[in-house]
Length: 140
Image (cartoon, rainbow, N blue to C red; front, side):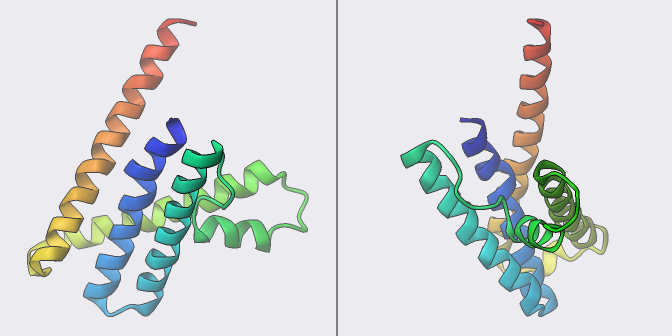
């Protein structure tokens, strides 16, 4: 259930941030990255529901990082963590830039709706994840 929650509150919202910001800035790279990540997240969601495991990397940047560093002595978990961290940094930089430069109000209505839903899911996911972690710590 944790993996499904991560897809719904982190993976898919990050896709929205990339596609919406990419559309706003006219960046086909961000749009493409967001679309690829959406396909990956939906694929992983499906395999988690049907097979109870992911078959794809968490996102495009994680896959690229894994591939680029595959010949290094870093263990796979560290390569994946680096890729996930790069993706998170990118998504949060995009959010910070859009908010900080006051660009949200200039988005089309459908993009604002998608952006707002993504922000709500992402913030709730972060808060509930942190609360869940703290409650589990009470039992140890």
